[in-house]
Image (tube, rainbow, N blue to C red; front, side):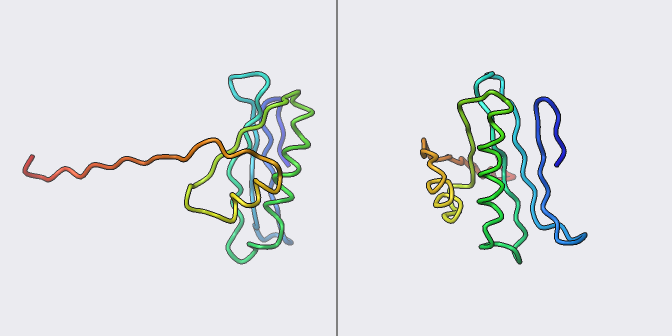
Length: 106
């Protein structure tokens, strides 16, 4: 774990093999802690690693004095939605992606 006053980064290793990383940091609002993306390697998915990291981030909020937590993810990845619901996060809205294709003749 690497920790500063405003940010924490957690790494999961098996021996010297990288398994996962996640981070949390203060936002511009002093009462909000953002929980970053959990990046579990494919071979280690479904091993509760993401759950443990998210749970530790929730507990770490006390050291930041932040009663409000925020986290987000890709709207198409259902397993992480279920994990966050299990941890009592409330889904607020969907991300929207807009694309525009411009032909070379324009």
